[in-house]
Amino acid sequence: MNHSLEEKRLTHYILSRTDFVQAKCLAAAIERGTMESTLVIQMCEYLTTLYARPFMESRPFGRLEGNWKLFKTQEHQEMHIRLMDSRNRESAHNDMANKHVFLVKQNMGPYLYSGIVEGPTLRLDRSELSVVVEMCRDLDNRLRAEIQSLIGTLYPNETRNTIQLLEPISPL
Image 1 (cartoon, rainbow, N blue to C red):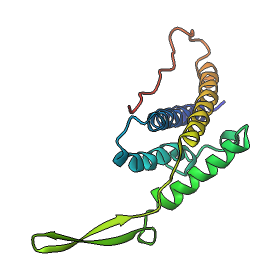
Image 2 (image 1 turned 180 degrees about the vertical axis):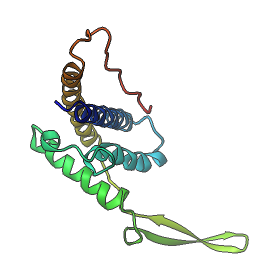
Image 3 (image 1 turned 90 degrees about the vertical axis):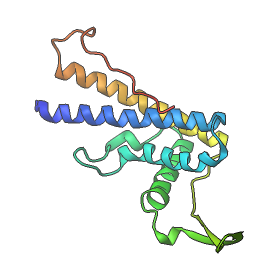
């Protein structure tokens, strides 16, 4: 067995799990309505980035492959596609084609107009946020099981008491 390959996979899974746990916490906070409304749009973009990052090609680990992007329900599968599309269209490739500038007349000193920049953003209602929380919880549980299995494979002589999987820190 190639331990360096297994250790790399273990590291990738731990980092991916951290993103999903943080996305789950953020979705739950938005769902509870604990944020000011002005922050919700930015937080939905951040939520999309956190959720999508493990599925995107990145160095040195690449993307989560295989069954990680398959879900038990059609609702979860459709939300996964929606989040990934939002990440690709609005968050990561936030180019000028997706932005609109509205000029608003104001009487503020020498400036008569100010520009308001808007672009399409992911809009999720409370029930949809609960779907994201469920999806992240599912991914967290699946990754946790795989991580525990890899730890057992990589460190078979260690006892369960000496190697523990620490919980990721929540952003909120």
